[in-house]
Image 1 (cartoon, rainbow, N blue to C red):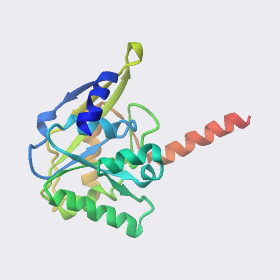
Image 2 (spheres, one colour; image 1 turned 60 degrees about the horizontal axis):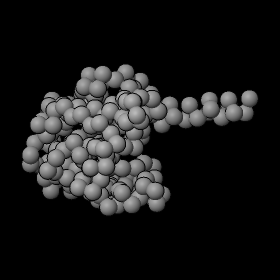
Image 3 (cartoon, helix red, strand yellow; image 1 turned 90 degrees about the vertical axis):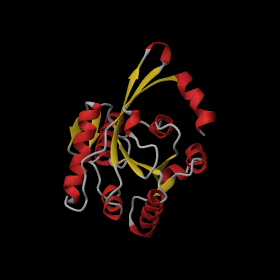
Image 4 (tube, rainbow, N blue to C red; image 1 turned 90 degrees about the horizontal axis):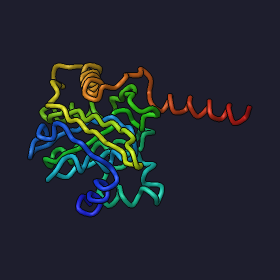
Length: 214
């Protein structure tokens, strides 16, 4: 996938990476990234060279042929966000990725942010169970930002933090999530919004509907 898609992405986008060397060359790793664009799922595997990145992606991506082909081909994990057995199976699969010594990438915001340059409240339902089951796995924050350039090109800046100071043996769930949140805000120079992204997206949609109806 990197060999086929990578050259086209570099042609259309200007990709800049900082902190690539912070990702270990071997062993399990969790990459906790903000989610600004659907394209994040294309760029982050390119950022981490020589290693495969497996995503926990929302199950809706697997329902549409427009996106399902990519996520299935790349071996990504569908996460049913309604909870229950389907969510548990996704978590079990994610644990298996880490137990196999591979890289797992997650979007703690749960969905794409409706605004560029902002970070919305993080969910603990994926990150915390993974850390409690694998307390020694290093966590790195990954912040991406997009900037329009002349001639239609887009500059993508991806910054990878050093290993975050997270110890699930002594930290509460809130403390672990807060550590990731603060790292993303600082790393990406993001504005934190103390609201879930799906709530903000629903509010914006209602406003659009009201404007259309007026």
